Structures are given as C-alpha cells and as structure tokens.
Image (cartoon, rainbow, N blue to C red; front, side, top):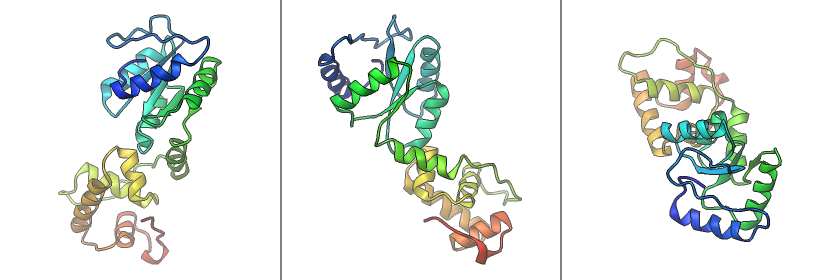
Length: 204
C-alpha cells in the first residue's frame, strides 16, 4: 500500500491480516513496488499521483483507491495503468479479498459503488469538443461545460468528470448563460450548437 490515508491504511491492514497467503508490504515513501505482486495506491486528481501510478504500473499491477463519485478520476486512473478501482472508505474485508485475488490472477476489479458513476460516463461518452463562435469574455472552462451540456450530460455527471463540485458547475453555467444572453438550458444548447430550441433534449 502506498499513499493511503492512515484510517484507510489501518482498515486495509486489518483486512489483509485475515487473508491467507498474502503479505503486506508497506511502501510509504518510495516509487518502487519492492517486489510486490500488487500495489494499492490512493489516487486523486493531482498530476503527481497519476504520474506515480503510471510509473508503478510498468512493473506491477496497481489498484487505485478512488472517490466513488468522481468518475473523471477513475477514468484517469485507468488510463494511467490501474487494473482495479476500490471505493475509498467503503472497502470491506470480503471485497478486498476478492479484488486482490482477481487482480493478482490477471483480472481486474471495480467496486460496486464506483461502477454506477463510471457507467454513466461511458453511457454519455467522453464528449467531442464543440467549439462554435463564442463571446470573447467566455472562459475555456465555461465553454467546456457548455459543450458537455450540449452532449446531454447532467450537472452531477459534469462535476464528476471535471472533478469539481456541482455548485461550481452551476456557477460556471450561470456565467455562461449571461454571456450568451440566454436564461435556460434549452436556450443555451440551441445557441451553442445552432439547434432548433424545440428539438433540444436536456439533462438536469
């Protein structure tokens, strides 16, 4: 285990202690897995964590501890080389046993509480960039969020993908509405994409 918070580390240590044929290697300060068959790495949106995951995955199998409500982090972790994702703070002994055995045997693992948000991201897709003419005052983030809205993503899904709060998403949306001169989601999508307002489908 590496870079895991103390409380989660202790929980995992207790779980591993009950598992036959598995020994815990504590790797708090190194980037080398030290001969371990599997590394459990706490992963967030920081670039250094993803870089570390990428480096570790070259020599061993890595399972990422992630926030189950941040599908954007999950996707980045998988792209960086993680072969499994466990929900931070929600892992019990039974799940850890199954996950470790599955991953060490060459398989993969996604916690049940991570799967719904990941599937939502897969369902809506990683949006293509929609880049119509936009007001000079509009920021890149506001334009990005408008493009996601135009692809039918909800505020909750956008927050998860971009690893920001839903309140921050709403703030960006309100500023974008003002710059576009619109008052509703339907009007914003129509203005942004050139669609006919009556044909626009929206997600809350």
